[in-house]
Image 1 (cartoon, rainbow, N blue to C red):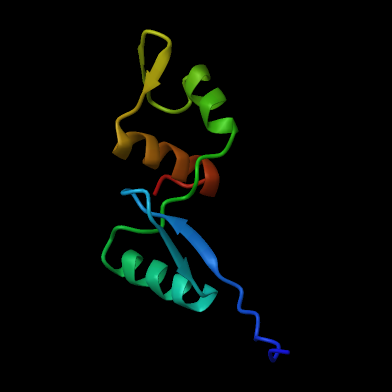
Image 2: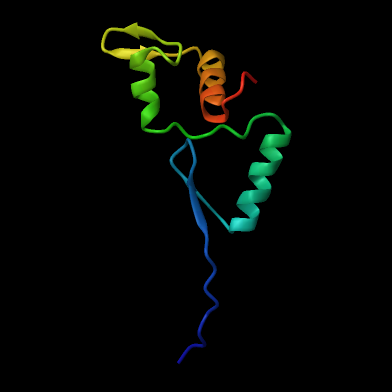
Length: 88
């Protein structure tokens, strides 16, 4: 009979090329922190209300057929202002 193996919680992250990356939670936090220090991290995930806000015009957008298109910097600024209640 084999010895019990230590169970390690891993977070699976899909890569753009279809492969998967499995990281321990502390390694994921370190990678996210490093990305933020490089200025490429820290984006908040879109909430389900963001689409509603765009349709109401509270997030700058342009309608292209049925789709709403956003200028990323303007949309991020509007979402940040809405979530924090500041004009940062």
